[in-house]
Length: 119
Image (tube, rainbow, N blue to C red):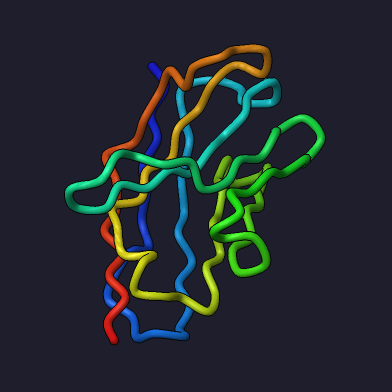
């Protein structure tokens, strides 16, 4: 049973930083892709960033490129999302998700963590 648990959300002022964590368990993730998504009130869920566990390759949405960094800690089976220079429009519930490397859809999702950026 795959389990993803997010943590690290909170309230931060504009320009501040937060680091989100996604602790993964239930299987070996060496062939998986882990992604971060977010959903703001009244909006659809959107892609933020992803990392391929096997080679650390990363990809970002244009809206966060240069401000957010996704990384992983193999020993802790944890993926991080370092968020810098936060803006009010970054306010959302952030979710991590996992899919097999060749998969199209993310099969497994965490429960989400709230990030609120105040101006």
